[in-house]
Image (cartoon, rainbow, N blue to C red; front, side, top):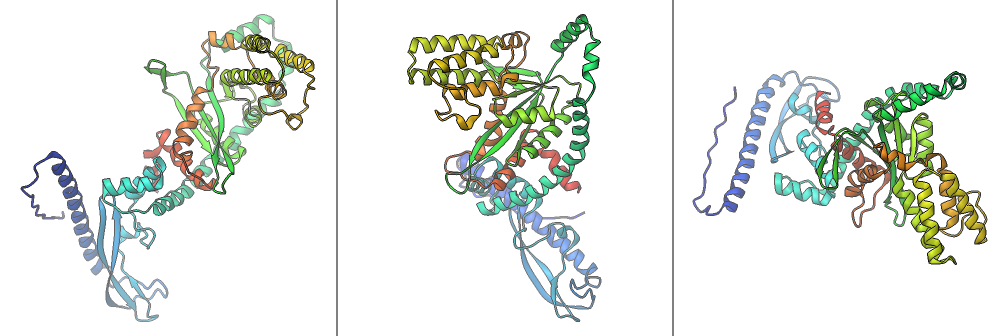
Length: 470
């Protein structure tokens, strides 16, 4: 049992709650620093005698050494800076000087760049993940009275993210490939012969069962982030796996109760691996009713068909309706009357709402022929802009399989909008990586996304507990 005695002098001129609060906070941090400093001195003194004869030279491993004084060291904690000294020894054989570091301090691996305690490292990374590094440094300075430069906080995030991603990669690789092989086997099962033996009654019964089941949703989208070379961008890919369980927070606002976020600034294959493992942890199996919500991007469709061949891919209704409106505006500015363009857009929205994608595609082709436009074979042949009739025709053709009967799906209670994944982009990416004036390297953005994902998925506490255990 260690005993520490402190003397506290309280001035008499504390006449307001502001002064009193500030004084008590500073006094509390000072007491904590003094307690820790005293404990460190006791630990060092106790280990100094026990390790005096057993301490070996780091180079020659000889145990004969002489005392040459002490070396001042500094430790940054969550309540300020602690100064202490470590005994120095000089090897009688190789003449090298070295410090005697007690075992509790060896875990900190003290060096000029790592004199930060694990608890302060966790808090600094949390601040750096939540706010810009300069603002994070100011928060730590005001709340913890500790001086960490913005570059130091960024360095801590980078170093810890490397370890975290290595840990996650090992975890994902062990779960990804076996599960993916099992999923891909469904593509080669002899379903044709089995389908021929099914009666129409059984088919209708299975459809009713599918409608009544509680599906799992996967929303996928991407957003562009400013790269460090100016006027360049790279894409951050995000996903959310969720179920229908939600509560109403206020009018027009709902909160999902069962959800997990996924994000990556790396390749589509790396993002797909993380998304697949997240879905597996959420209980998604090959027999699970799965719905993938997307905005029509080709990489999302290809990813969904590869990893989830039995899932229903639904083109987000909001994006589809928005593209119709943009096309109507383009037609008005390129020779078609406002009334005719508006009526055409209204008819097209009605067809698409009821799932009549083929009729909408034929209508676009007929209108294009009237305007003298030929149907493009691919995007490279579209030279009239992103909102042109040709671009919309390609958009419909490429997403023909994912345009469903939205009216029926809405009546059955299914989600037909990617509003949840849009909110995921805001929470996971925009609130930290798309602030004014920010430019990122791909690796730096990936580091921040790694930790924001831990925070949003409520894995932050368990992750650091695992770090302490290891």
